[in-house]
Length: 406
Ligand SMILES: Cc1cc2nc3c(=O)[nH]c(=O)nc-3n(C[C@H](O)[C@H](O)[C@H](O)COP(=O)(O)OP(=O)(O)OC[C@H]3O[C@@H](n4cnc5c(N)ncnc54)[C@H](O)[C@@H]3O)c2cc1C
Image (cartoon, rainbow, N blue to C red; front, side):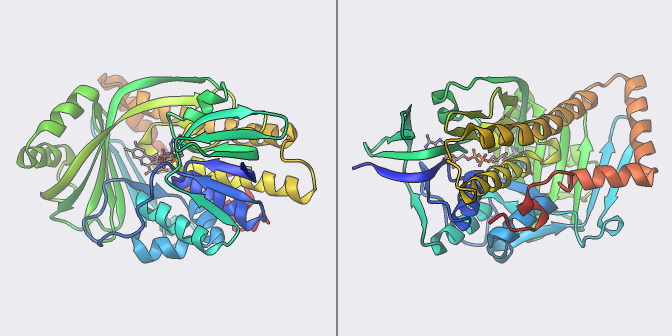
């Protein structure tokens, strides 16, 4: 027997779990498939190395889904300031939550916390079907829907498949959707560190010649670092002893947080610019990293993915409420138009920033820094950048505006 659903979401990471959560609360019969059993319980320390800066818009989505309290309870660290330097030429930017109507600019949350809090909510929703471990290995389109074959031999069918299965999305390939992109030949090296001085609930970012080094505040007083390095330097830095790594990191930090006292495990992630050429196909849509992968220098990847989640859920629920079939390509094309442009602007901005800051020629660096200082001293322009970074743009999905979409 083939189990049939209105929607199957493939991938139970941050974006897929949020999509499923929204759809179920909108009365859609959903199955969420995830190839691994998500981690649900762990000791409070050590903090995991995978951490995300979440925007106000993402927080709004999680609040509407009922997942935010679970994130706060497991540990979310609010950051109130953001300080950015161009080390080569001395340009500086300072964003302060005091210049906004909010008590913070955003939050740092472990990725596993986001996932666990969403899965906790799904557990409380009787109409949510979560199947794990469930690895999709094949997808076929037929007259009544799309059929998915799992590694364990099971077959499931749905009117609509939403793929949130990450940057190397197998479902996207199965749907015949190509990607455009390139490798940055850079890695994002991540680790959790302890510092002599308090992080002051500030996100610190120093643009160095090889790429930005970010110190992101964590709830226990430690910092999460995301250090963009050439693939070669990153490999060398991973191979260093802890003692030697602390030394190079302290030097690169310029002493902003005093001595670097300790470091946990380190890992590096190869960085890529990539977007799906189409976001939709017949009875099929991609969202999150399956649709777009961007440079992490402004911490926007999952925030963009959560806006995809809120948008596709809103349009699917609306289509169902209007008693139109979920096989309709009209609302899928609307989803693509809504999110693809916004994501391309965001990822291209990250790309331009990365390229701009990798130019080391002094005249250019001086010009760049002068631009930064000008922005810093122009309240209106700064307020615009601040709102954009907080995810508070025009044309947000309802959930991101703290409005129900069901
Ligand atoms: C160093 C670094 C720092 C970052 N920092 C930030 C930040 O501060 N803020 C921010 O917004 N973004 C940040 N990002 C980006 C962010 O991590 C990603 O955008 C986010 O993880 C994407 O989430 P996702 O749910 O779309 O995909 P994923 O997290 O990749 O989840 C995909 C899920 O699908 C499952 N899956 C895959 N294939 C199958 C299959 N065949 N069957 C079933 N399940 C499957 C996987 O197991 C996984 O659980 C950062 C990225 C990097 C590399």
